[in-house]
Length: 571
Figure 1 (tube, rainbow, N blue to C red):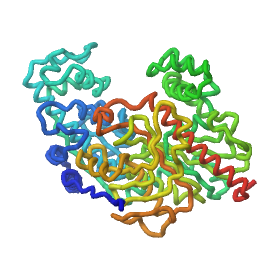
Figure 2 (figure 1 turned 90 degrees about the horizontal axis):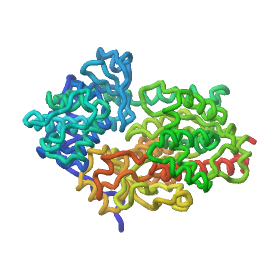
Figure 3 (figure 1 turned 60 degrees about the horizontal axis):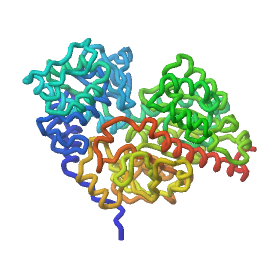
Figure 4 (figure 1 turned 90 degrees about the vertical axis):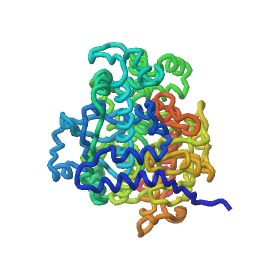
């Protein structure tokens, strides 16, 4: 008989996690160098060469892309959940400028000198950020030692071209890796390279507060922002809800229709800017009236919003006319949300892939969709738990996100019915609302693999070949970060007890709503480490993203029409 619970004990990873949590209990600063030995010993798949003298440019690039470009100036990192937490320890961070990163949605503020404040929403932010900081410092100091000893001529801050060719020789890496290093350092690469040559890095970190109550308080503030955008507040009655965790562009594009109605403007933007070289493909798809044209128009819309000053406000007004509102984010939870009022949707604006009979019946609906930008790790648990407290009947929960695949290819859609959660050590079995036939009609370039088994890891750096090998031998082929926390929250939505630990949990009889999980592959860690350490899926990922989003929206529309026709809803 097949075992449902894998033996996932990996001493190196466990030691690393215990090391940084025990050190972070200190009431003062902890130097990041205290984590370095455990980090190197963990043999992380993203940082296999941590203990070598030759720089691991791929690992450094991954870390740098998830930290602000001003990171070479930072000496102290302080972690807290909200402004009040920081203020209680003497940091008035609300007035500090916000810094952004390319690879993480996490609110960061900089005092203008050497202190970076990072808002943490759950323990997953710690599991993510601490290894990132440690990898960054390890590789920074490797490169510093080599540059300090070598003769490479680092360019002046106003240099226009790439570094001196001897830089690659002194670092012991290829010229292409120097290109990658420059890209990772961002627009300030000249200044950062000079800093690399000038000084070593000795970061310190301090966790101001990490209590469960603080995480719940942050989730409550986040929910208050959703309530400000919720029309149901006018009559005081909690409505039935379909909850979707995806992104903030797919559902509005499919249901709002701005891009399709303004294709000529977006075609001009694509011709002028040609993001990711899409213009020739867009022209061909438009001439053929092919479904690919919609995906490319949605991609062009992103560039249009960045390059046209008034476009964002225009799109928001358009969407609001279809009952799609953006919630105000009152918390420091960098997870945007939208409230979609089904009765105000305008089917004539829908993406053609949503076509079905009786859509006019939606005018009688009393239901809403709450759509959120997918959170990181355990934040999913806190946010869905808060949603469950604030709505009426929960009609469906649908999750779409990125994952690594051990048996597929980048871009494939993965559908699992079993999830092992490394946070709770539970293995969840559940009836997934989706199968391959729901996705396949909308895919041409990639595959859909259903009946898979997924594992929710604690963080990208908290995996090694032993860890992944255990899962692969047990038939687990999908690695991701949110499904387990969502399923723990779903357990509590259908059971009077807190979720258990280290059990096999069958959710089939515990939940009274529709449940669906879809992932699309962004990485193949067994075959190509660089895939996760490189660029995003970009335009290539549009087909998978919109295939999943289309399946989710069609599922919601179909079930809501059935509910209306059965008399279980007004109308």
